[in-house]
Every structure is written in C-alpha cells, then in structure tokens.
Image 1 (cartoon, helix red, strand yellow):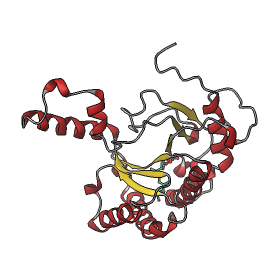
Image 2: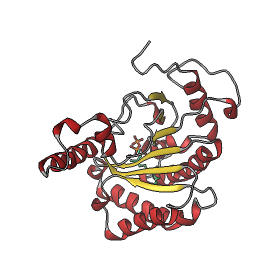
Image 3: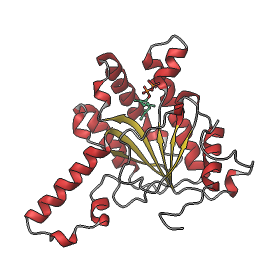
Image 4: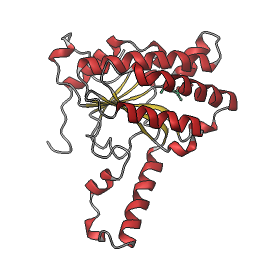
Length: 247
Ligand code: FPP
C-alpha cells in the first residue's frame, strides 16, 4: 500500500508518463528475516533476488536509469558477521552479473568509493563496468560504499583543487559544475525515489540530485516487493504535479 498520494486509477504502465531515472532504497531485508525467525543475512539474500527481478522489470517497462542503494558508507558499522555476509553476497552476485544482465542490454555502473572494498571485489566491479560499457540499454547504478555527503565532499575537493591549480576561476563554480563532479555526472537527476519498508528517511542517498525528486514510500519490505508494487509507484508518480519551485 502506498502511504503517499491518492490511490491511483488502474491504467496500464505502458500508458503512463514514465520517470526517466528511478532510485530505490532497498530497505527492510533485516525485518523480513526477523519476522521469519531467520538471520538477517537471509533477508539480504532474498533482497538480492528482488533486486534482480525489479531491475529487469524496470528495463522492460522502459526506465532509462535505475539507481539502487546496496551499501552505504554507514553500513560498515553493522555487526562483523552481517557485513561479511553482505560482502560474500556482493561477490557471488558480481561473478554472475556480467552475463546476467547481458540479454537485457543493461549497462552496469557503480557509484561510491570502491577503494573501501577488497581488491577482489574492486576487480569484479571494474570487470562488470568494462563488460557492459558498450551496451545501450538501461543504465543501472549500484550504490556501494556510497554516501551522498561523502560524494559532495569529494566533488568540493576536486573543484577546490582545480581552482588552486588555476584550471578554473571561482566564478566558474556553478550548480552544473558540482553535478559534473558527482558520481552521477552526465546522468539526469532522479525523477522518482521509492523507499519500501515504510520508513520516511532519505538516509544519505542522492541528496544533491534529489532536489526536485518525487518520493513514494511503500509499506512493503524489500524482499516482498513485487513488479505490481513498482507499477503502483509509477502510477502514483504519473499523477504527481511537478512544479520545480514554480506555480
Ligand atoms: C537495508 O535493509 C539493506 C541493505 C543494507 C543491503 C541491501 C542489499 C541488498 C538488497 C543485496 C542486493 C544487492 C546487490 C547489489 C546484490 P536493512 O538491512 O537495513 O533492513 P532493516 O531496516 O529491516 O533492518
């Protein structure tokens, strides 16, 4: 059930005004597992299945960019065994992903600080990006060791260094220049961010990029998220009146 917005009229997704860029905060894996008396890592395994299903579906319905929040800069604070289980899951996923999204023509990109991961994981991330670079389907950004504040600080440092080196003047610092120094450089800002699990938080996700993004909070845990839930979020989005600060 959607907590925001009017109940949408039933209409085909193919007839809707589609968002170009969708972000998803894949939340609720731990609660899903707890409800079943399972360890939290079982929730992440199920969450990874949902991730594959929904990614493919987004590509099928015609979304051009999808950004999923898989691991934040703050998630390292979780118990060692949970972080270890997530790293194992990322490794097995990345080993399969190269061929996995090939038929769907999906371009895989990682946003976040890769250097926080093991050399093996970093190599797999690079390989995934390299292998999918030439595809021309949906762009999938997987946010791993990603934090939006960290991303903004990184952009500020790069710009400051260019000013110091005389490459640009202070007057040349614009909103566009900041956007160009983010991980998502060259991509449109997200039109829609979906957060399952009923939490009303942005959790350090795409802060700069979401200045005019529409939010849809769904009262479903991520492992339970179905294609029909995405349809519902898209229907709610299509009924929103975006004004970008105007009237
Ligand atoms: C948040 O739920 C979820 C995460 C921190 C991990 C998300 C990872 C996946 C869905 C795995 C799939 C990703 C890839 C790229 C294979 P939570 O653990 O905070 O849930 P809770 O709020 O119920 O505790």
